[in-house]
Length: 584
Image (cartoon, rainbow, N blue to C red; front, side, top):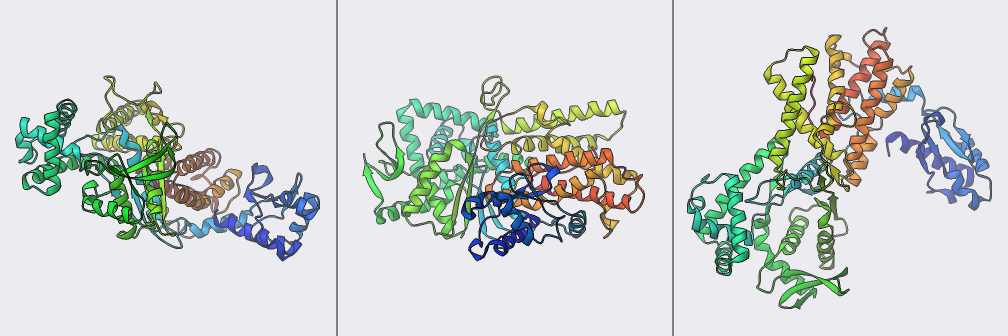
């Protein structure tokens, strides 16, 4: 709820008490944005809900409230419509004052959190010895945007990359490389990532079909866990090789993360099992140590156990996730822990959270949140894959987006008969290509699957990153054409006269509400929707209102509206991890 709505809500609450007595303190005035702009900006629907309790017609109740309602500083005189809606229209002078107030504010009127918290965002999480692919796209982009918004709100955010860097796969890979490419285990950069992935696949095939090799691989895991010098050195080399490849992707996407992989928690696993045992939660089942869960059953309807130690004494993902959860609460002192993973892991996290609660590890002031997301689909509606049926490498996907943006820009420059340097073309193509991929993902409700289409995401029209980048560039085009420095407009007053100016002004003042809602519900698509609507409202204003040709003081007022729109777009897009361009 934005500041204006909060003020109005408080005033309606006071009017309710004044009209009907102290018993009505705390009654929700049901104040919402008006469903139709012709009725005003907000409407209070409380009169309808009180009709039965008061034994009066809603219009009579609304009339009694309006008699006691003082919103003269903010609104025109309230009007009663229909069966008892109280309609409120913001005064033009109030809107002008609000815009004048945020001109000098770098946060554009968005207040920081009153009680900043330590928050952890767990996202991206690729696996060592595997290349990042399209399946890592959503976690990486959504997680980064959530972290940016929480940081902007003033929270102390720990961005964690829980990479898969421990376990059986390393014994398997090291055992295989000892046979076929021993230099990779002693020499840095002996393999590139493509070869490493190929060897991993061959090692997996061998592990699945050769019992003797399985045993050799398990022995390597034992050596790794025991800290054998040669195995540990080999493991470090493999991790470093993968880490460098991951970093290339993160730099392309402008993602910052702190790596804390599964290996970090390995020394803590035994104590997790021990503490669960002390809590009386552990049950031995077919040699494995388990915790039985409420609300989870197998196909036969029997209670489903969460295994925390396998029958051979080994640990699994659940053990590591429990260890990491406990560490994040006890050592990192996080008050909200956010896991950004695909929807298919929903049950896993529900189980982990339930076990941790039963064990008493989660204080009342700590919130655990699983942020699920759907699949990236190809234009055939199936999982996005290459023509040969392989999973699409993330590097290839991003390079293709930049390449297509480059080709589109070249075509546009030819049509416009514009000459630009190759440096300019390459930079614009990079920003547009990467931004298009990010925005296409973030603009979807994350819980849904979406179809990946280069043509749609690179379109200069519609709800796309290029459309909004173009609006931002258009505003800076106005400043260049008029030789205007927006920063030198000073504290001149905004004057709202045309209908499109009023519409744009009201929308500019909703930024705080949108960011606050995303901070709570972790749905970045709401910010995307806001920025798209803002871009459309600016274009309507631009089409109908002369700016540089207007007379003073209207000219400066409209330039301030342009500046506030550009700054709002830049801030909003930065919270999505998207750069802006002053020229396209």
